[in-house]
Length: 332
Image (cartoon, one colour):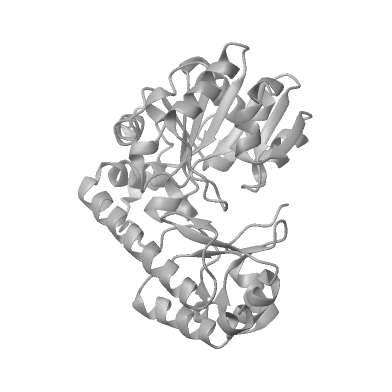
């Protein structure tokens, strides 16, 4: 199993302090979560039904013509490589490492490269996997460049896969409204923006023929009934969504200010997190963990990702923890 953020219990065992005493900034999940209502008992007692209105609500929210609900975008990441014969696959790096892992495990020839290299040499690949905005590198792509990449691949029977797990704060940049064309597959996560990571819910936007093959691969009841009940309402709550986007952009900007003030000028980031690439990353990770502040450590390249604090007290706690490290003085 690959390493991921959110390993709070493990950190608590390693460094001490009860889990509830930690400031967990190790994931890109929004701490401004959608307020989940009470779930009727009948929802727990019945099998999930595909015609419950969830797909219609999701198509309206994402602007897609065709969608398949899945158990988090991770389910699609693992299943999509099983739907192709052996292929040459280019995956963005650095990026969410489950993409390359899944394609390699399915027997494909995988190269991990910077996005600029992938887009400059699309002809070398049958499948290109991009993350937009990238995690953790923060890269963003112009619509014309992405559509040109898709056109090049599609005419050869190839795929462009765009992981838009962190797109909800900037929905105008999504390619979901183009994903009905063959060869373009867009992955969306409901866990990041809505703060519902525990529900393990996501969607795939693609041509209906591809979605049918993916449905057959995943089998029935990919999402449980309570998750479908909650998502249907969250996707339709436009007022909350507008407030959440405003909150995310504001807190992200404030986090960048705090990091920069202490000598950790973000290398990149988006509304959900900031990324700091520096040789001192591991030392800073350990020093913060000893103060009960959990971040996400990357080895290649050496870097830290900081998720958003939930409130003013969390931001102040990070500010004080960073101040104690004197990083600004050590880098001058």
